[in-house]
Image (tube, rainbow, N blue to C red; front, side):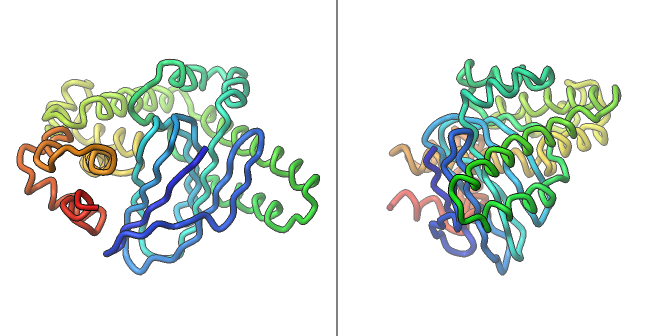
Length: 278
């Protein structure tokens, strides 16, 4: 799977993985960079698929489905070590068919789902990336292939164990969080996601509990997630279409292009007008 990475930090620059492996189970790409201030990392996929994202700084490991197109990761300042595992769909479909709680998730690839779907993030990235160091140090291609095989399986197995450790209450909360995520992903460009009281009523929870469930679903506050999806969608339109900025603003949920442009520049470091001229 071909992935294009782009970072915005006062300027826009394309970055390349410092290490990558093409394996018959998955493609693995490691990014290492140091940021002097927060920035957005946009990665663009040329086909739909399942990914695992690991961040050493946050010790976060997350599994999700992403359709063809662009996605945005917000990064803090400091040293970043990020690992992207792009699973080969046929293998992951087989692997997850053995895991009851992931069967509904992997069915998304058959449905040609058009929005990203995120499973929870778990604090296992550092331990997994310690195992990854063995691959980096291996000179023998035959031995390295076996270690990569073991590493990829271990990533999915450890993630699933964490995923199934939740108790009954945790499962209920996760189901609610998944419902909220699906609703936000589908309605991000409408006013339905802008009213916290209305959303709390819709999902029959308190506003405070809604905030906790949204954080569980996205890893960031609800409002920040809505902006993140809108910015990612706006970036995709700017890169892949000839639509004018005011039309793109409306498509992603802004009634006035001024507010879209302001949010876009804050997120990516450049204005939509700058990209539209490229």
